[in-house]
Length: 337
Image (cartoon, rainbow, N blue to C red; front, side, top):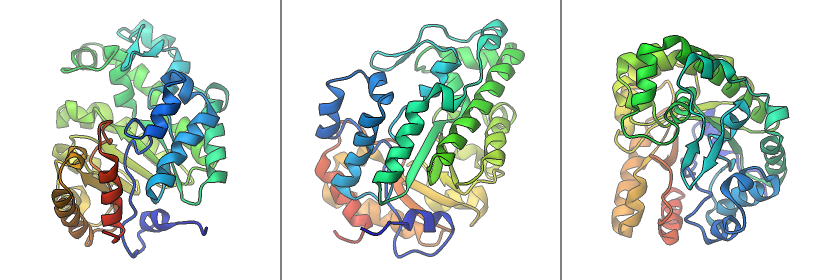
């Protein structure tokens, strides 16, 4: 088959026949094929096996005909070689959270070629196997820091917010190492063949706009300003209130969650500045086909007047999602349903 470059043309700002479509977490637990592989290995073992990661990355492309693949891994994989004792049980648990300047000083910047060669080998295998573009990805520095400081998921993020305001030196040392490591990690994926990269800032929205501008944005900007060789999409969940700040970033694409209209996001980010990605509510995939189609058509209509639109969910697909609804939504976007 010919190479499907609709994502790349969209990222370049070209007018295309329809939006490209892919879903965050499109390789995963909603698929029987994935669960069969996962039943035989731990999650970290899966992430560290190029052969298995290649297979699970390809599964949704075969099953649904998405317009691109996204590397199968986890945002926390790069922090383990930095000195973090990471486990999944099943959610992430960190045995040695970073709470002091001494803890931050112990962290080391990661070297992708040396520390995560399995990720880069997976990228190389996928580029050879795919007839669609490959998206590489990373967590953003603050989102990674949330896990590293809290030690697990959190409701209130009191440890990292306390660190920001009472131990700024520890926060700065940790974030500088995370920003440099993330830049090197994304660049290594590009250098090994990834066509596009995405940076996930899942927890950016837990802080105030003032704290985002002062304590998060500079580290994101450092990465965006220094990445070379491929377009970057930045996705900060629950961030509409500081889109005016995010709109200062010089990247190609912006992810939009389901709580914000694409047209409103475009207006607040800087009209026509970015290709926007989003923003179907993943929970609506549990609904009727009629409701799925109605919402999808509204999103597609909003996307027509943007610089470019990549159809995606507003966050990751959920494990109990009915497979037939995934297939149906992809067909709607492609004009086949």
